Amino acid sequence: MNTGTHALTLHEDRLFPVDAVQRAIARRLYANVAKLPIVSPHGHTDPAWFAENKPFANATELLLVPDHYVFRMLYSQGVSLDALGIPHQDGSRAAVDPREAWRLFARNFHWFRGTPSSMWLNHVFHDVFGLRVRLDATTADLYYDHINDALQRAEFLPRALFERFNIELIATTESPLDALQHHAAIRQSGWQGRVITAYRPDPVVDPEHEQFPSALQRFGELTGEDVYTWNGYLWAHRQRRAFFAQAGATSTDHGHPTAATADLSRAEASKLFDKVVRGQATAEDAELFRAQVLTEMAAMSLDDGLVMQIHPGCFRNHNRELFKQFGRDKGADIPLRTEYVNALKPLLDRFGNEPNFKLILFTLDESTYSRELAPLAGHYPALFLGPAWWFHDAPEGMWRFREWTLSSAGFYNTVGFNDDTRAFLSIPARHDVARRVDCAFLAKLVAEHRLDEDEAMELAVDLAYNLPKKAYKL
Image (cartoon, rainbow, N blue to C red; front, side):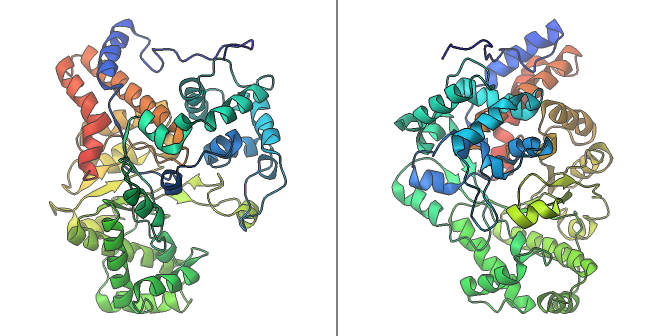
């Protein structure tokens, strides 16, 4: 695909150091990890893609509509979500031609210059679809037609792309209310691709979640437990966790506003739960309830072996009007200042020294890397650090994460990289960026004689492949 005036290229030294000595080392390290299988232990791809293995609809539905990284930038510049064909909360959507939505995106692709979204998308355009001209207003239709034609071919079906990307494993993320029928269909199909789930109980844990009352009712129907009593509620969680584990889950995930944990007595917890289910909980009660449930989840993880992840510190759905119209996950989530040392102490007092418990922490508050998270992970055997996440998975954010956590936590109290994405085709690009940044960082340590190159070679492989497999019990 060679028409057009501006060539689309991926430089072989992208993200490597400018310094020639360090760049040469980074090249050697990267050559050793570039082709390793991808392990994606936490993400949000749709398991239906792999269960049904149907062609993706078109370029807009595949690359634009599901990706809040993309449409939040467009929205910030005044483009309405209706103009992009983003579905409303009730499932309806404006009558927009997907080609026109793509043209709108293409005309404004320059807004993404220098961002990680630009880097990921150009990687997809170049490596997945073989495009060799830049996306802009003049090439919008060329892109749209070329991508749509490709999507009709067998080699662009979801399972074929999974195999082409050299993905060893993907973990999706589902609510306790999910029947996991797509995961069952994948297992029954005979296809060898490994797609597992993760237990994300937020709708039945957060009293401030708009779906909490109906979700709790459905939780009881699914489990047969009296989920309006504290004991029944906890047993329902144990039952669903076991169901998820049977579907391949090795982890749970908790997206709370803060990292607060609590260790109430059974009587205190039961009294608090009664207020919650009666709809009488204050904001402080809701926070305490979420905090107590995190500690209960840790206790269950010690019993059933599921790795526990906490993704705190985000004011979700900050744009009230957008939330009313379009619902959750529409790019209006904003990082919050987050405290960990005191917040986690009740949980760590009980489980921080347990050799069979594993807790992976994430943050959107970079100021906590060296002050709180690295010292905690560098001490407690149960505690590990997840990679730079969400707003910080740009190369600069990945570098800061390594730089600010190394002295206290080292490399082996971290868990490698996970892409945490809904954008399936960007997974190789995201992992490639992480591998390049880690190799650049290690090259600096080698050049400064803080590491020997053979040690850096081992570390590069561990960060790209071995650590995520070990951390997530894969």
